[in-house]
Length: 325
Image 1: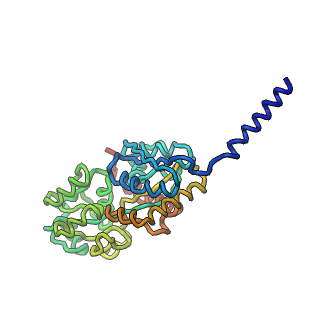
Image 2: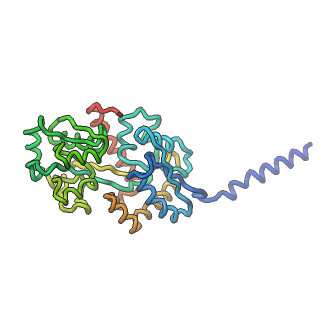
């Protein structure tokens, strides 16, 4: 009996040591990137563009998984609750990782339950008007809005969306309050502006620049720190007269909280190399997505930027009394 016990103990020691001595370095299997929206949308497109160069970097398949619902919160929750082993990533944007925290009673905290990996893209916005609006630049637009605020129709692509929030932010900066005309998405709102049904709209640069260049809309500024490659002729808000009015629909990547630091840095390295790929940069540019400078692609930079965006937008959303539809 004693001998048998010794054999069992010896086997336990022997086999118990196997996992530690044969443990494979990360990543040893495929990595899942959770897109909190349906396939084919902007976030899904970015994830699928990045998946192939990331596969080459890591030597493992990047599985893009679409998990929809609650404005993207269900997909983010899936990652927040996942094992902190680096095999599940959350790709999301300003709406899913900032705005939803003010709209919904989330079962997780956007700052403390997720680990930042990298900021991957920004898509600034711009104020545009129908061509019959008499103001030719922002210095003329602001007094025109103030003089006609009871008559002006300012459109949005839905209550609480990026165009609505950016529009409120712009009007707050110039000291004007007015009701918005909500549409079921950005495309209907843009068509309403083109047809003259509304007067003003604040939308992503990529959505409006073609119409501006065709002379169908007038643009007043882009809400970015620098002029945009897609529209270099349009001044920044700082240049036009509203310094610091910076808004964008930006995208980032996170893991669950608790992923080891060395894995976070490996993930960051893979994303940084992916964003440096010439073909990826061109594809992002074609989509109107600006890749941030290398210094802004670090986990620390995303952490600081993420918190600053929450601090900036939560008070605005709550003071406006906006609720999720």
